Amino acid sequence: MAADAPALPILLVSEGPEPPGIVERFGEFDSLIATALASSSVAAAARFDLSCMVRVYAGDPLPPNPAGKFGAVLLSGSKYNVTETHHDWLEPLKRWVREHSGTLPIFGICFGHQLLTVAFEGAVAPMEAGKWGGGAVECAIDRSAAAQDEVFG
Image 1 (cartoon, helix red, strand yellow):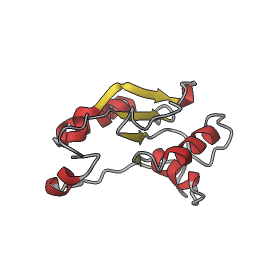
Image 2: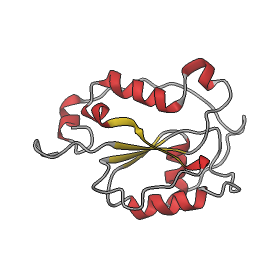
Image 3: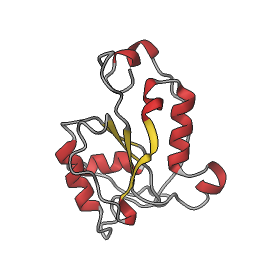
């Protein structure tokens, strides 16, 4: 990103409430994401603003032209599974993701990465043990590479 370019906010798209037990143990997804970004010291953290959140599962409209208004999109987790096709917001969200995937970076966490998979005709199936599972993976950020990236730099 050019040094004089304005830092555009990151749009958080929430696809559903958290699975049972998550809020009590860890907090809501939007707060978890904000905390993780804030503690990362990556430049993207400064652009994560909870006022830039759309709760599609609750009927919030998706922005029709996000490029130029947002620097990236983050698709959150959910208690739902993308194989549950009865959600009336799921197909419009997949179309929106396909339409805007070439205009700005779109990242997915948990349900969000499943949504990216099915939006581009990939396959997702429920786990044998149930509808969802949880785990933690520690990641390291290559700060020199991140500094050169248009989203993280």
